[in-house]
Amino acid sequence: MEPDCSGLGFTEIEECKIIDDPKFGRIILATGWTQSTGSDGAWPYVPPEGWHFHPDYPEVTDSATGTHGGCPSCIMTKITLYKQLEESEPPVESKKPSTLMVAVAVVSIIIILYVLLRKR
Image (tube, rainbow, N blue to C red; front, top):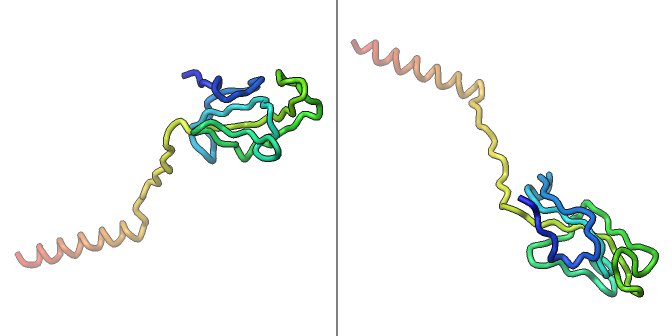
């Protein structure tokens, strides 16, 4: 499946891919340049519904205006967004019986057999 990052309003897309993120699970990761001051400031970028700023990627503001396909007087900031592809379920821990649990089960079986065989 090829991810769609066309609706993000980036003037230049640097990266658009599907990854398995350790924090957020299976996501679309999109990095690109915007005519904004990033997540805050005078002209903040507002992500489309379902998209979020990825906290592990720093925002980079270009010192020159109008670079990366922006208007001549626009502040340009590179941002990284992510969108969850599916609800990530926490991994299921396999519940292996402990040595104590096995010992208790074996002793219980031995006691039951002893009681049953003694009645004969």
